[in-house]
Length: 484
Image (cartoon, rainbow, N blue to C red; front, top):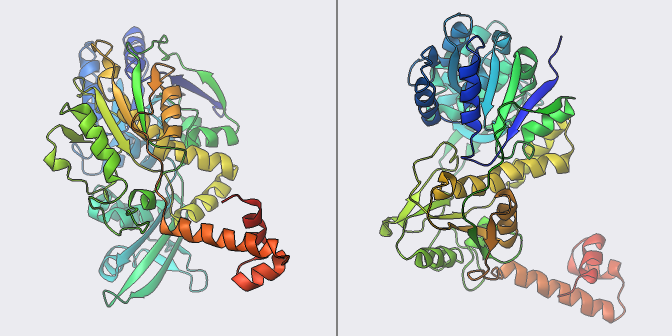
């Protein structure tokens, strides 16, 4: 019978989700658990905690322990010896779920299930690692695995899956082998480089329902499970959600946290942060761009005390000049060694590029999720959740900190969201909040709106104005409704 129930344990970071699992593990020595965590670093932490309660039949399998990780996991799942098997989310998504039938699956934090990709690869990489395995339809540019090549393609995938320099090849092969992705590949001449390249566009997602259906039970632990795309997909598939036995008792953080929004309003973007004083958009980060000032303000505010920093790679602020600034990765889950840090700064945005937005729309349609709901869930994961995770890496999670924490966030809206996610243990302070910059584009748009209104006041119709200004009738109608 298909398992249609998922058990969810939602609780603040550091409040005892893993501890509740360990207590259940110790109480029932005959159940077998597959425990999946976001990173290899976190497997080490969970391993130590399991061994501390004298459970020794526990295995860790990842790219540090085995070359062919998925095969090793599948073989181990058939053995009777391990009581607990620790793996990463990535491995869970790669293995054949039919091996999970005798296991209770515990997923610590929600995996990212969106797997869209648009990348360019060189002719050498295409010829050596893709071309012999796939065929591409000339008309549609849709790719598929050649007949009889699946086994060899899986072997190549296993060889390259952990190589960061081969991530596009690995993602493409993995998606094609899973068989439900739409992968499009076309050649083009890169005129700047003077070389032929291949553009790969992949519309794919990881379907956790096969894990839910094959496992004896599935438990998902996290601070915000219900706000994720995986959760929305489970609902669209008809799964019933019940509270997990691993849900700890509710605990509030010890001190109120001070939250400092850096930009007024709701919006933040790369262009906004790269806006120059004259309204133009700089191609690269420099000390004159708008985003430089809020970072300086935050660093000045903490007065040399350690601060966790989360920014995009294109943010080239000279953090090396500030010994107290600690850069941490975007996936901060499992980083539990900052109990002496009281300040965090997250200056990021979660806006997809136009091609990413197109890919997301196509993916959500394949998943059967309403576009608005799915895109909000994805924004939660790539923006709201990242800000929350950085804030809860600080001393706030220890419950033995001796003073409040301070968290600098991108916008006023982000500040309110973080306050909500911290379960009310916070105070939003607008002391450092600045108005967003006025870009040259905004100035031009305002000028066009003003002109349209002036022409309208002279008695010209919207159709005539649209013709004169070379825009659509709808655009003029929208302009006339706005206030400058």
